[in-house]
Amino acid sequence: MKRRRRQHGQPAQRTLRLDELEGIMDRAKAVLCEADHEALLQAVQTLTFLTQELQAKGASLERLRRMLFGSPTEKTSQVLDNATPAGGDGSNGGKGGQGKDPERPKAPGHGRNGAAAYSGAEKIRVPHGKLHGGDGCPQCSKGKVYPMSLPSVLVRITGMAPLTAKVYECEQLRCNLCGEVFKADTPDGVGNEKYDETAASMVGMLKYGAGMPFHRIEKLQANMGIPMPRTTQWELVERASGLLDPVHQAMIDRAAQGELLHNDDTTAKILEYFAEVEPELDEGGNANTDERTGVFTSGIVSVTGSHRIGLFFTGRKHAGENLAKVLARRASTLAAPIQMCDALSRNVPGELKTIMSNCLAHARRRFVEVVNDFPEECRHLLEILREVYKHDAFTRTQGMSADERLRYHQKQSGPLMGRLKKWLRDQIEERKVEPNSGLGEAIGYMRKHWPKLTLFLRMPGAVLDNNICERALKKAILHRKNALFYKTQNGANVGDIFMSLIYTAELNGESPFDFLVALQRHHEAAAAAPADWMPWSYREAVARLDKKTAAPDAAAP
Image (cartoon, rainbow, N blue to C red; front, side, top):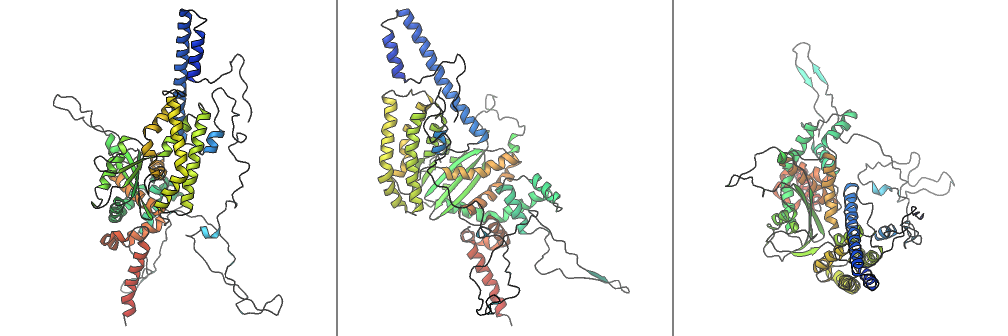
């Protein structure tokens, strides 16, 4: 990395702790008169204040930059290697300042997808044109050829419109004498509906799964020669949402019984809430300013057994209020669940009791934001947390149970977190860090919420962070960035249903498209027993229906 050349006249910068600065001022008092010492003290205090404000503003600007443009990475190696001390030349530590470990071996593979990755592709068996199993070998004329268990595989990808169409031209015959018209029968399986279940599912996937607005889908379809007006798209997904809602409600019931619930929210916009309305007046004729004006999309991820359920709620309510609405369906015989969220009060579900756990990634991010101003201190903390996260990754790769994972963390991560707690305390109590600085505030946040940040060391099933919920909210954020808003609360409800079903299918390794199609094609059976139509069980439900339908046909003479 190139060293930054200092401009002419710019003084070399040096970082001093507050106690060092106070010691210098005390020694200067012996050689300065009281008036000069007082003037110098005021100048130093002013400089200290300005430095703290600049650091705070710098952290705020960095936070704003991440909000606007996103963060490329928060990996410890990247954060520390890119950290530049205040007044430094960017050459602090790291491995060449490149953010890469030269000793780390490259991951195997070339980045291409093998044939097994194309699970949704049509598979076509191609027999050999000249040979069959048992035929003589044309090469040696002595042996016999036999089929191999692994065929030679070719993958060919073609382009097409997301929604395709078929035009059936049914032949018509007319009698020249009586005028009777005879039309060819419609092929079996075509049906009478212009749009089938796959059309609504594809529009829902594009709109609520990929964040593609209706007008863009309309333009794409028009360019492909298959018109799909935006009004038609809305009618399709609105109708489909009514068919999907029974399973969505059953999914909420199932999520309420979870052992661990993540929640968080992000801003949203619903146009009907921004219409010009007369403000409510109190008894004194003054406008009521207590009415909430914000709109939010709350994400809730429930872990129940080996399954995970993702739910979305868009409207006036905060994440905690929406979680309370879900937990109101919880069985009274169950113990209080673990709740993972950040430390905002709006994430708390009111009077409903949960075992609160706070997100360690949120606390860590506060140090990432000030790493350029306090590189050595932040390095110490980030490297400790890196080891803790390595231990957590190991528990997942080994498939440990909740109790096994707890014991492992207590043995491996407990001493690390104990040293970190002592280090945090020493920074403030020994006055190594100014409490009002960016680093001091980050330390203060972590110390204040320490019991909730370390619940994973005391309770089985507790996790380190809320990252899974933040990933869930990316669907809502993607929709907000592309479509900007919902027009009505009803439109937001439709979006919540589709996002919940799509994300839950993704969390459980199922195809969201196949799931949506199955729920619509068998909506009567799904409405009768919605609990059987979860993403991890709907295929068995479809198989039972097919078997039941085939049984009378087999018994028919």
